[in-house]
Image (cartoon, rainbow, N blue to C red; front, side):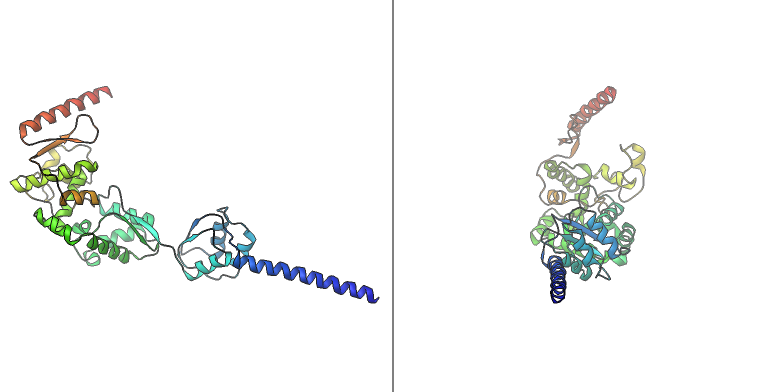
Length: 337
């Protein structure tokens, strides 16, 4: 009888030790062992609960022991909206603490490519940040919000990649962009603009016209030089991109009827620069205006090879020859199609 009791006691102790050991292992693994393979980005939206977030992480297939993650998530009551990055060093408990306490990982807000309208800017921001594009557009359209006339918005933004929290409020997004623009305009760049007879706002406006003419960076200083020559000689800029701007960039070709519109942005009708930028010019176009190529060109037209470059001329007769060559090439190309 005594032996039976002893064996029962020993069995119970063994079971207790086994269970205790298993629980201790679970406790250790949840808190000390990396439980993820590789990196993953987690976005938590306001409507998501812990269970939904846990399921989305498990769905990635990068969780070594799903049971460990499920255990620690059962202890979580709330999560902070934001963007978080999980990597191979993270434990299960660290991930839940990170999401609960809001230890966010910054995201890259990249402004690049053609940004021709405030709407395009708003969509780019809305696609990369928690803020929706409608809220961004409303803010950008308010002079009280941005502290300047909306027509000058693109004079205060220099396209680049900026790191900030995904949850950054709209007003703080613009404050950051404006701050970075002010930092980009160093004393040397301000002096370079002045040397061309331009204010910072005028330099941005001219850069936006250069941007509208070509995305071919090596030619941008040459085109900037053409427009500066026109300004200095008292010519009208006669820049097609300003006309395209007036028609929301819809015309594939600028026709005589388009040139009739009465607007200060119509550089075929009015002398000097338009009231503000017609796009958000990239750094390459800004630098082209600050450091233009010195030449005597007044005219340019597309190269008949259709390689994106242009032919330049110092007088109208040369320009006519270039224009006719392009027109012939265009006619042949259309016939071929």
